[in-house]
Image 1 (cartoon, rainbow, N blue to C red):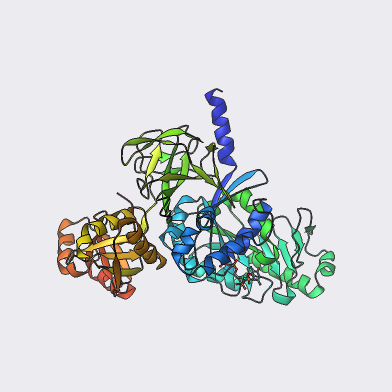
Image 2: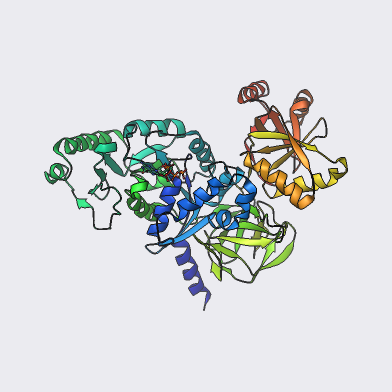
Length: 534
Ligand code: G4P
């Protein structure tokens, strides 16, 4: 095979890949939508498969049993399915009590996202937080407004809420006809097709009724004369009020195309999926500290964005979730682990399927592979068959919950230190050492991370420790170009300053209000919500 042919194969594989995550607030319908997408992709055969996993997860009361159900947490982390010739990787964003820094970090490994909004609730806090992360890389977002079979807010009020809270312009690609008991279906503005709602019925490709002129009287028969008139008025209004869909603006995260439907009734889902594969971007260039890496480059490269420890004492291995950014992966290939300067042979990589994990022979940019290791891989680590690269945009995120760690056996101080450093490297927790005093402070985005840390300290480092609550809720990494000002800031705020596990100066405080106060007092100091790895 000559290199030209290889190029074409690589390009073909890249072009058909879509790697995305769903962002939503708990209960908006992520599990339900995921299940419908997997059904369309043939990755699961019956409704209920994803849901039952979620129930199993929710029913297990402590995280240990969750983690021990390894099949649950690992195999649902990445769900791969094929649809109309596309290879789709759906990355799970844990969102209920397992909401953690991993939820944010998953978003650094995707090329696009689908945002679900509950039509009765509008934009909710977790969606807002996840959107902030998407903003960092201007990730393109498609919006699905769910639960139209229930009464909710008026569509235009939801648009206003999204535009207001998320600073992204909504462009409807479909429009709902009524809601709740009066929900009749959606009108697809692009295809000029009416989809008539029938609870529980899965629509087929040829179900839509073409109505390219809304004055067509068939509309009155298919829905009702009053709802047909309402639809005509609505479309007139939105045509006058909103900008047309612009692919470029969608791709740079300025506009979001909006679909309406009901995930539980499988209504509007296929329509959204069809648009998704068409407009969502395939894997693109990724920035590194030295240059941009093109997915079509022949040499293999990628980065680790999540590490999952095995809690089974018989198998103390970890799985590093690795996003391929360029080149082709083949089983058994040798790659350079640049941070430790060693070549490793990846012979047992895993590719994640909806229900099982399979050993893989090859994988392409956009794919996620799982690499087994025994604690040698850190978040952000790069493997390549090319020059050393440091991919950017896989940061630590400012924790919002804090605990002080109290050691039960003082002789174990060294082991505690070692354990915390390693757990910080794996992204399980963040560790801060106050400039004044010795006690470790640990920080997390979700409180389950504390439980994980304690259990792992005990199981892997034989350290018994306890937590003490601490009145902190905000962390910011600080920097300043002017050394003198930084010195003065440090002097004045010593009691609130710490060094994180990689030695970065971090300001910890009790509230956003206190943070605002400090920011006002020290305008030259920069307060960062994220920090890149060393
Ligand atoms: P999540 O993963 O985002 O947390 O949400 P999930 O899919 O579990 O959905 C949360 C609840 O909303 C579920 O109800 C689900 O059935 C319901 N739901 C999802 N999509 C729709 C929809 O289009 N219309 C309506 N009316 N409800 C929807 P539940 O009572 O919590 O669970 P279940 O007993 O129905 O399984």
